[in-house]
Image (tube, rainbow, N blue to C red; front, side):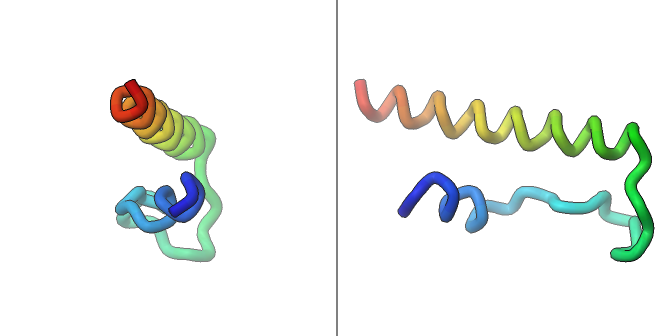
Length: 53
């Protein structure tokens, strides 16, 4: 499984829970989403480095 496939398979939120699909994100929601994704990607990287060692 590629890292991209793994990312897609994991339960990472793609929209704020109460936001309808057609409503645009606020800058705060975008910033939080980016922070959540970066944290998840960093944890995947840490896991891969630990298993490789």
